[in-house]
Image (cartoon, rainbow, N blue to C red; front, side, top):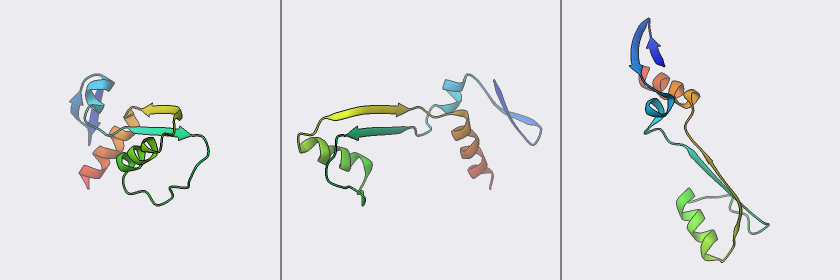
Length: 78
């Protein structure tokens, strides 16, 4: 796989290699509970929720995609 900008190849590699270092996402779902609509930070919120003894129902991990890579390259080009 290769990425090009303005007609020039700027990076080559596998999707995993090209997206390494980009942030992914973690989504944790709990059964009903208090509203956490004003998060401090995702990590702090998760720690606080787990400290209450609540058990996650689902945990989804989203790895960075080629769209994420494209958006990061667009942001650095400006």
